Image 1 (cartoon, rainbow, N blue to C red):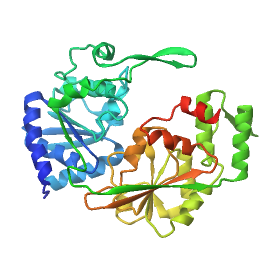
Image 2: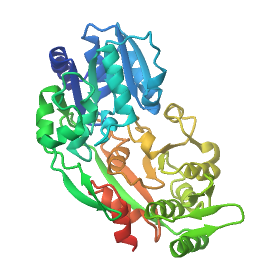
Image 3: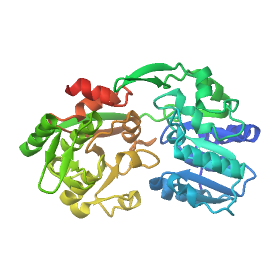
Image 4: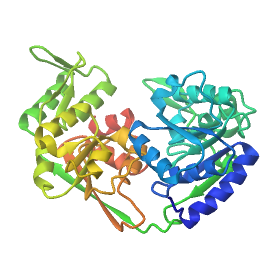
Length: 410
């Protein structure tokens, strides 16, 4: 049987009042404060019988575990966003919980995910609970498509994002490849003010978390052959082998290829990938031989390098890692940055770094718990590589873009 923390009980009581009045609620609770369990607790106080919980694939087992511990009277189905199309026509839900709701925040046009959720809400007319520790991580403009499918959302008077932006966004111009493009990222704080009646926010500090995150960057010399390959690509924009070709005929491709190659992998024009340098994986194994690690990688070929070096000591399942069946766990940054806990890891180690500021702030916090006072995160960067410049951008809450790359490596 689950015992809610005092603050969760208060949020549940307040949340029930909000959702009964408005039919939707946004729980903006920071990671590790228990927003999943809190949302399930709210559901148990409503007159609902069938609840749909939409989340990321890696978080499904944890949510199902919380549901079993809570033992409520309603039936719960947990699926990932990529499986929304599999919901059968005869299924009926009177509450839908949308985890990591900020992932629907693309603008100015809605993402496929946001469109699917909108259709789902239109069909079932359910209560809706949105969950996120970072509702608008990069721009207040990200709020519009998170809630536009909810009939009585505070922006329902606007037929689309463009009309919404007329009132709530400071639209500017920016140049991309010589063309002037409208930039809609200047959403005003008025957006959050309009959402305030429907939102309950709660921080780790309010919950009594006193843990700190200490980050350390470790630089690894890569093989000379890796540096030579990068130099050739920067000079010639193409490297042709016997069977494969590395092509960087645009700025975006050059940025992506160098990001891969400095860390020891490459994706060819054919779509095939190859590990060209295992220096990072070998360094991690040597440096952290006695510890249990949560390792985040960026590119799929980096997982191959890790498996070649660590063998059976590494797994990809949180359940397997928590059960002690493997010494380490490897997770791709984007899929592992949300909805999971690495509380059983001694350290988090980043094999590479993502261009997204959201990835940085979320993935580094995977070990935090209320009782853990200190977390250590290591970043493994290639000497002379691109990662250090990416790190400078994302720690300042800026995505690393082609503009940054051209400035840093011109």
